[in-house]
Image 1 (cartoon, rainbow, N blue to C red):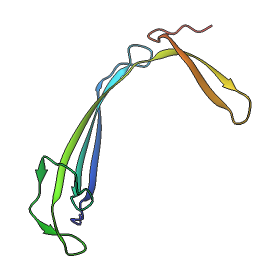
Image 2 (cartoon, helix red, strand yellow; image 1 turned 60 degrees about the horizontal axis):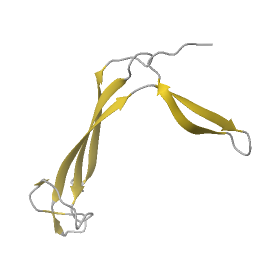
Image 3 (cartoon, rainbow, N blue to C red; image 1 turned 135 degrees about the vertical axis):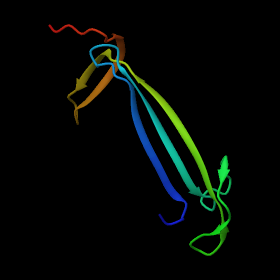
Length: 105
């Protein structure tokens, strides 16, 4: 990989294997960022690389950071309607209840 400081990495992992019809599921997403500080003059990074020359032969550093996001997906029952004026679009009015058990009519 060329050291231009434009790199990121994403990884998503399922940590709770609930099903949609039960109580939802949980994922953990990790984002690793590697960015040339010439693109972010006011940026703050917890870790920096050694100084190096960028594509314009200007001395710069690469900043490294990471973010972790935990997402919990839970089914719910919503009240919605589909407008028939213009392009079809669902409009959600409210969340009725958690959708842990759905009965068909």
